[in-house]
Image (cartoon, rainbow, N blue to C red; front, side, top):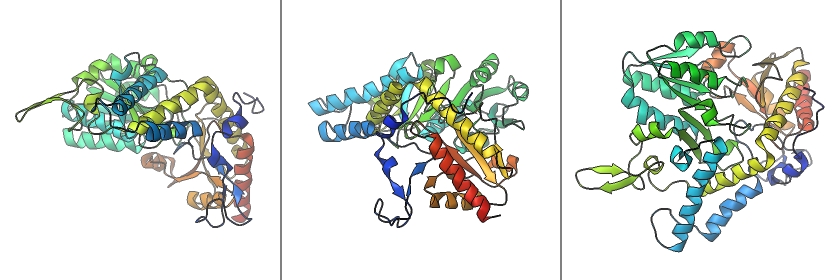
Length: 426
């Protein structure tokens, strides 16, 4: 793969859709855009945490608030009907985007990936797991998965085991096959590691799990925004992701579940919206997906997510994937040229669109601060993977992550800033 390959998308046209990328940063942060001459053009490389939001998505949300703001499923007046249709169509559009042929019944809107994980953990895991059962995770799990299933294990008596990560940051699939046995009831795996960039063989994991009758939960927070995903091709029983990492608004996440599995589960939250009939003695639940969406749902956020999916589809998810791969390989190769930089995870031509690294003798937080002085926004810390960082033998790492509006020139700015840090701490 040549790092000089042309971008598969029109990056300059895409950048016009993101006004925030015209920001300058530095100087007096209390007056954004009005700082002194030492401000720098924003180089936003923190997309694995949150992507930026294009004007098309913002406009869709504004249109809702200005044009038909109303609660859904609760009124027969025109605004409520219009909002209800838009909210329901958002479920349908997301189902189409991820290959869920069951449509809206298999798509539950949550606040984020973490809430989706907790929904399954408490609505299914707390009721179905017990002593003698096994939950299998990977060593590269985000805390959203690791902590949640760890706590369910403590509450139910189920044991939690972890599939090893090898020296290149890949899953040890032989170890996975050893761990996933007849006692295993759930396998939860991150699709793309938010620290290592590893793209895990989740379809293969699903095959292994289903052979012993276990369910599979895939954390797609880093994959759905960056590449084509077909949940039925993967054969995931549950699949979760967040809108704010894929050009959408904050406050909206998605839980996909196979319909027959969701049908069997009891609700996680109770109250309005999710009921069919209530008496003083008992209650019954609404149909899918509404039985899992208690209270006023994220209407504006769902409409914004619909617009984000449309935006990404217009770019073409194959193009999005290729663009990220080009940038990740370019960044990996440029960072690898420094003999005092350690990079974590697989080689640059075999990873998702992020690179986590450390500069010898410099704490990740200090490096991040220096990069910020150059206008480069990256992430520093453990990235909600503390046990993985313990395994790597580091307290924290610096992570640059890329998206549809990033360029090689921005990676060059990152490299220049890292080189300045090298000279400063030499």
